[in-house]
Structures are given as C-alpha cells and as structure tokens.
Image 1: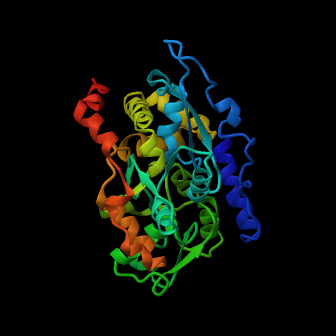
Image 2: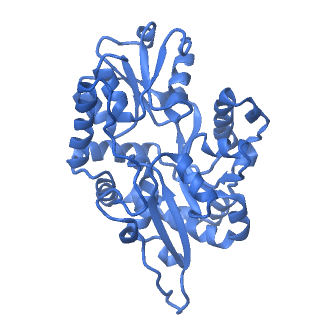
Image 3: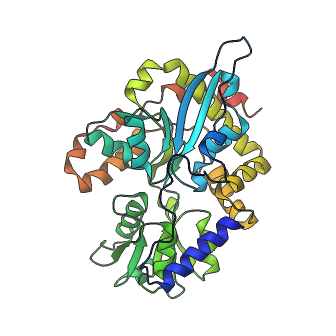
Length: 361
C-alpha cells in the first residue's frame, strides 16, 4: 500500500500548497534505490559463466518510470529470461523521462532502452540515429478522467484539462481527444502543464482543471477522489507507439546476434506475463511498491493483457503518428520517413520461425 498512500499524500499536499511545491522525489542519483527498495547494483544480475564455461555477454538496459507500462522489462529481469540465451542483462530505472534515457544511451551508458512516444523522432531531428525494434504497447493507453459535472466531451468547452508537459504522450492524448470531438486545444479548451500524473490529479482537486490524462494504476486514485472516466483514448483507434525497445542503429549493426538473443528473452517475458498473472502481479507490486490489489489488477489488466502486444511489431502507422505530433513543434520532422525509425527484423524473424507461437503451447 505504500505506493498508493505516497501518491495520495502527494495529491493532498499539492492541493494544500495550491501547486506551490513539488511532491514527487527528485530524479534519482545513480546509487539511489530503484522501485521495490533495491539499488541498481542489487537489481542487476552479477556476471556469470554460461554452462559451457564462457562468460555471458553483458547488456545494459533501462526504463523510465514506475508505471505499469514498464512491466515487460521488469518481468524479464525478475524471471531471468535473458540468462538462458547467454546474456547478463542489467536493468536500471533512469528517472526523468525518456529523454534522460536517450541521453544515457548516446553517452554510451545504456545499450537498449524501453521507451516510447516521440523521443526517437525528437532524437533523429537532433541528429541521433535511434530505432525502435519492438512496440509492446502500440496504443495510446490513457484515459481522460473528469469531475462529476463533466459528463460529455462538449462540457470541457471553456474549461481546462491537465497534462504532464508539452510534447509528452499526455499532451498528444489531450490534443488528439479534443480534436476528435471538434474542440480546439488552447482555444476552446485550455491545457495546463502540471509536471506529472499525481500533479495533474492535484490540479483537478484544486479546481484549476476539470479533467486530467491518466494511465493505470493512477485510475484507482482518480476514482477514489470522485472522478470518472470521460474517455478511453484507445477507443479512438489511434496507432501510437507508447512503449517499446529502442537502440542506436550503430549498436544494432554491431550486435545483431546479441539483439536477437535479447529479443528471445524479452518475448519470453511477454508470454510469462500473459500466462502467469500471479507472477506478473507480484513483479508489478514490487516495482510500484504497493500491495493494493485494486491497483495491481488495474495495472495488470491494462499492461499485462489488454494493451500488451503478443507479437510486438513496430509499424509505419505508429511512427507516422509520432512524426506528425513532433512536427507540430518542429516542422523539420515532416521530412522524416516512418520506416527510418524502426527495424522489425528481430520480431519478424522469431515470428516466422515459430518461436513466439511455441511460447504459448
């Protein structure tokens, strides 16, 4: 319950201070604890020898948040699905969002990142060459939660909705939802930047917005505070790469065999999530630091079943949506070709080989 109580306390504190102070902890230093109270050194498997006496290949991976959308890499680590393919994979959380992870990757500190949204397109515009190799969450898995008086999208007119920051997935979700219903962002409906999901809830409670964008398990807190789901954004049918694996193209070119082995362990983790609910919820509870079963059920149903792709192909349609969003801020992004932002050869090869089907037998 600590995670849930901590988030609730943040909302109450932020409301009391009228958003005058930040509640979330500062980005962790390299030696700070990861979710579940373990340090990066404790979280990472130690170098070991493969059965034939050769050392495993070291791979450094990272993810960004405590969200349930990060479950795949966490389960792969906890179940040690990479070891059987001769890999010694470290898994680290880097706080501060996907741009921080990309910075670590470009600095040579991370090999493979579980990230999503516009960050790869942003990096390409800035001169870096990153590609997605999977899209394990290929939809805009967010919902718009509103106060009781707002019962339809038209009721948002003349009011404001809360997002985390401009250029983020929540910003894209807000603008997509409003436009779909004929409402003009920042003209008919205001958009308030709050800095985080908890802060968005606090903004609504303080009366400075009437709705906010959330993903599981924060929907549990929203309902407890009397909000209701106004719109399930996946129902709009928008293809969007919310979370997947990304690498530098140079690393991909030099380490195709390693990436193929990593992909086998990663796909095995997806199957373990879908086939072993109890274990997946146990891992989710560890990394979100909660035993609240309602929160765990919400997170698992969304990111262990409903939105988690069994065969996580990245597609041109997913990346075109990302490009269009980035181009609204930086017109030079319109020159990007969606096919240049992903490489599905590893998923495709294992799918055609029958490896994925065998995981579910």
